[in-house]
Amino acid sequence: DPYEMEKVNFKIQEKYNKLKEREVRYESVNLDNADLIIVAYGTVARIVKTVIDNAKKEGINIGLIRPITLFPFPESMIAEASERVNKFLVVEMSLGQMVEDVKLAVNGKAEVNFYGRVGGVVPTQSEILTEIKKYLK
Image (cartoon, rainbow, N blue to C red; front, side, top):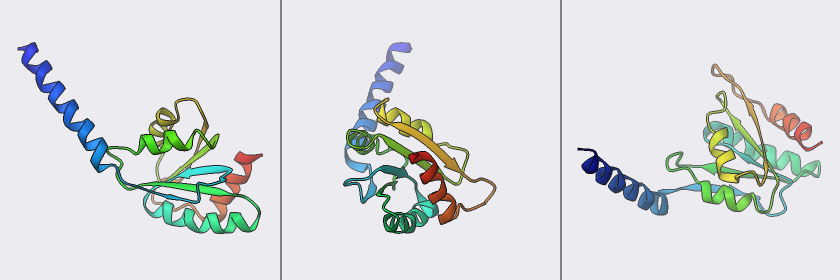
């Protein structure tokens, strides 16, 4: 019965909305006065924390949003950040599975770029810093 299925779908959506309110987890680093915000998770986020320090020595202010939960995604945090910063760089050890989530969250208010490595290749600090410099030109 499609009407019963509709009720079930509404209940599932309600559960998801509650989950979004209570279970979204993320870490934010150095967002104040950032020229660019990197969105990264896992190993890459740890590397980016060092990149932030190295970039600061060169006069580049980088922020980091590290999603701890990917579902639900911290879209409201990223949307808030896009009110202050107009450039985001998604860095992943993949082909960009998180890029669309970030683009949806910023909703056209900021430019979103991607840098990734695949096949188990871990991006280096210098690679990420080079990408940041190219992007900020």
